[in-house]
Length: 192
Image (cartoon, rainbow, N blue to C red; front, side):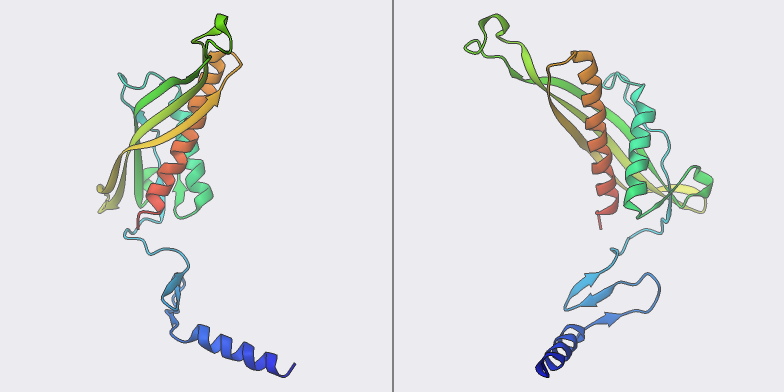
């Protein structure tokens, strides 16, 4: 029993040797070369405005999706909490602009004639894929300055269907957009 405090003390001394600590509120802790805490960002954005997304009309024929996808993106950033999402550009330090550039909904699996000769060639599985271009702007002297961008960020959803294809198509596209929102948030937060 007398050995436990000695071992615990030695372990604590070993772990804290080489620790670096800046005592400011947001500074991370470094232990044995590993940094604990939030990543160091390369921008000064704390409050982020996400306006309604745009789309390329001849590539994305689903304008009704714009508000739903905008809300999904805002929801992802709100859950992640690296940035405080604010409703207006006037309150923000930066802005994330998103443009849907392509949307595909295609069959990926079909009934084989050995399974059912009458239904041969009928689609039984689909994939919805949504692509977006994203650009992050930082406000400098009140003007937006692009600090990074990504092209063709992808969200996808695979679907087996037995229901009405028009309903499942819409649901699959929404779920692909939800995946896209997650990837957009990851690109913005984990790029450092």
